Length: 434
Ligand SMILES: *Cc1c(COP(=O)(O)O)cnc(C)c1O
Image (cartoon, rainbow, N blue to C red):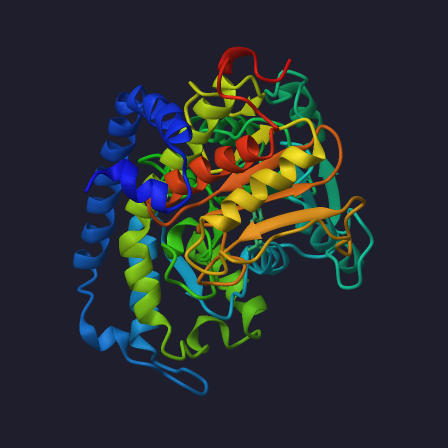
């Protein structure tokens, strides 16, 4: 049995298989570097678990108030060890990344305080949290003032502008690591460290928080290793390893985590309550798998970048760039290609592969949106998924893959769909979209 036979059974033609695997062959060096990072991070995770004496008693479920939930408390110590912080909140009752970010912000800001984003507009869902778009219950309604300094046109930090924006009221600086679904570059942990050092020179006691979504385990260091007081993320992205069915985390200074916990549960209760309801095993096991899962997703993103760049499509990051998150943007230039791409991702899924995604008018968006995901956990974007607004320049955002082989099949299936619909040609691959 040859590998190309099984791919043919999966619906990949030998032409597509050959085209894609030739490109894969050139990526050996890149993939090796990713494996090294995964190996390092795997050891970091095991060490954090060993240092905190993780044991099978920690997998027991708690209910009700969740007092003395040993599994929860130990998991939080594991996260604190891993991120080199004093404390952590890692819980199913942090229901998403947005919720965790809200809890971290709302817990640490008081009326009259200023919140500064020195990296331009934050992720869409944060706009309503902050009150950039008016929203009931936003930080703005509670008297928190928001300031933003945009990046310079080359994507670098506007140090002069940042200096000018920091004042006696500035309490918390929020730095988003991943570009999310914007066009700016994603920051490396090193760049975030430079920014934090600069901010600390101007105002030493300001709280620096990093939105770490999609960035965990992409490098061997995390923002909390370069001075961040808090880092925040979602467990249905990288650190949940695909196994966490819900959850978020906040790691950082004890005082910051305490403040966040009084917002998550209630003043006076804080971290002492919050039953884990039997989910601890999947949190531990997902974290254990996360370094290799993240590596698989990264390989998929690099594979896609190289294939689509060879076909002449603009890709961000490009085929050669270092990676600081797992998201790949590909500008396909037409609605038909975007739809075919998403249908390829869906057709490659282990779940709901028989479903055909179509664009629809989602609330809150100004254009129809198409989404492809055949995931074990609803909405999980560490699992192979793609989405795109149907509007110029017709870019698709693609991320995840619990294993490299699944990501590889997904990317090949997108090419297959495009070829089948005559939307690209592999014959003259350098000039296929003239
Ligand atoms: C996904 C994401 C969020 C929000 O997380 P959800 O779990 O979808 O609420 C925030 N910031 C960034 C950069 C993200 O990628």
